[in-house]
Image (cartoon, rainbow, N blue to C red; front, side):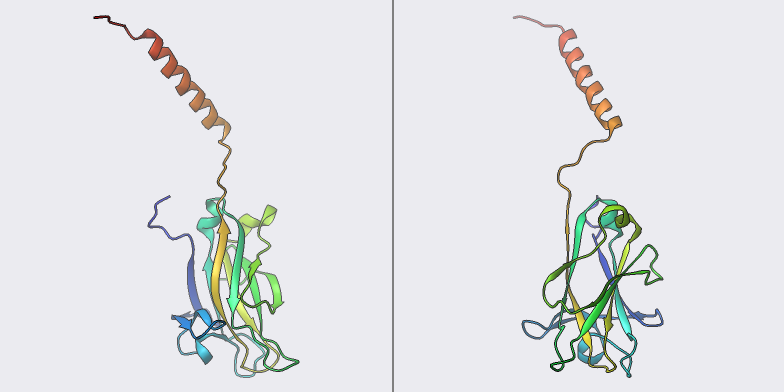
Length: 187
């Protein structure tokens, strides 16, 4: 793989799918990560009545999938309790096309500042080239979150395909045969 090719890319969008500029927020221990310019707290937010998301972030993980990386996880920040009964929440979606939210993988998570494994491994992993994070709330616009980090594991021990093993075996035999047939000179 070309080292100049990013493993993941992140894009910000409004609910209608139009692009939204990203913003890196650093405001304390639990307020850092990728957010959006011009939103409440520069974070992913809900619409004014708090019943639907106003914007979202899409992560293109297709290079990780194509390179057989596994154990994909995300970490979200700024998931705080607004009151004793009300907690900020977020959803995570998986899709194989960049223009669709797709299938909800995680619903109403309140996990803050901890890696969350995404249920992408196994038979479903290659279906989701895009992971989307949306805020979820309880009827007010205070619910907002940041995307802080993405983690994945590179499979370090790869079993060569049968055709590759055959080629390696033939190359080894050719090297041995060549060594045996080289003329030897003695001075």
